[in-house]
Image (cartoon, rainbow, N blue to C red; front, side, top):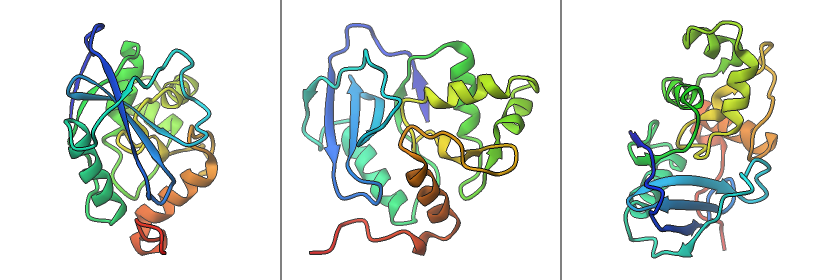
Length: 181
């Protein structure tokens, strides 16, 4: 996965991927890199974020993102390889990179992730950075849980977090990618 800082003047565009097991996903890009992935009713959408003009889902980087998300939801993909342009503090970017090292189907606590970062007392800061992740699922912030294994905080809602974790443990347990009918 390539991560770089988005150009400040890059035009923002968006497209919507319908029919996923967690509902419609709005993909946002600046140039040829994704800058956001938002779920319906996501509670942590940054207020200054704008989605920009609608784009053809066949354009880069949307085509690759849609293909990879569909493969993920079919249980065929466990890590993403997409160009990302993420805005965040240096610490947030370190947390987001560390999230990508949590294996598919596994979880870590906020404290364990802080220890991996060499900051064992920074569990709360890790949680805050986790909550600011602009590309959930792709950067798998849903794989971080409370110290006792409880589900805590997720921008897409705890029900979606629960479903994503159950799906990754047993891919047959979610539901079809496309709704029946």
